[in-house]
Image 1 (cartoon, helix red, strand yellow):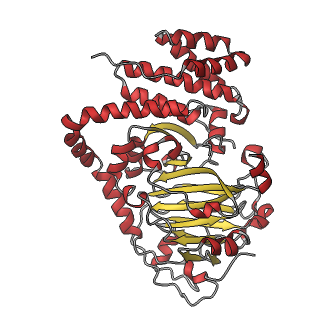
Image 2 (cartoon, rainbow, N blue to C red):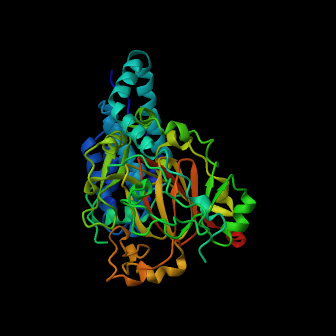
Length: 484
């Protein structure tokens, strides 16, 4: 049975877009798209390649927005031909690329095409293949489930550290963001930037009476020292971040948001469906395993051998559970607007009310998913940031914005929000002012959220398989509201 072509944008919408492309000199692209609309697959391929080249003709922020929409249109044409030929996986992949790299104009059309393809697949598989697919997925992912269970066992007895410092403080559109911008600058699949074994841990050797919220002594044979192994030098030597259970919005606003203090909030996301669903790797594989996402490969984005790749979520799950993960090959879904791209996961989370503090306007919601050992190096972000830990644990270190100069930011515009100080290999001779700086740190546990005030420097390291969600928001003035 011959498959129908996917529905494409209405003629009026397409013509308006093509007129804008023509005004930017894209006459060849327009001619190719018109031929593609008549069923010419070679013209569709050529138009797709041409739009892709335009996306790489300049740094991401300098690319004409109309070319992003033109790329989305070419993705819809390519997906239609793939679907007509029975190549569902190819169709989904190119539609995902349209969502990741394209503009906002045709996002509803891309999502509708994805829903149509997935709906077809589900209706086909329900009767004849449903049970077989489920059993196969369960069998294939048994190693992943064991890896997650092992990670949880390794870390299940890490004690709550943050309560020790209960009163101590240190005095949506998905694109562009820095990672994508750097990726496009060098090429889509292999950017090279200029730019563990664990045992059960019990923090039984801490002297919790210390009012500064730090261990009074570290015994070389203690289990706590095993946690410290692999963390930056002097971890847990200063002030822990205050933790509050079900913090009220008023308390958050008055005692943390307005003064600009970080805080850990527990109990506020326990109702999220993600808290249960995302622990099941079979759920992720069955639901979104065939979707394509950009991942980072390497130690972190400041490493010379770091690169980005496009892989399916099923491939990502396989890499996460692999026992052969090396630091240079760690794979991390980092700072990606996954919930804008994949609607099935969007319903698993909710935007916390804290993001509305002081007339807040949500700017971005990003996903962070990877194995133990993934690192986001020391950097700062302009918006307010709420990091929700859904699966696993992370170590987080914070420095206030007031010590920015002592953290030696890069001078390059693309990296000026990142520190040259490598906390995992601190060079005291090169960065002498950084070594003696005070900081706050914590272990962020499942079900907890960490509020990071604007421009506070933060370093993050996964202690287990980890799935986190970050919410960025800005304060909108009443004048801005009137203007909108």
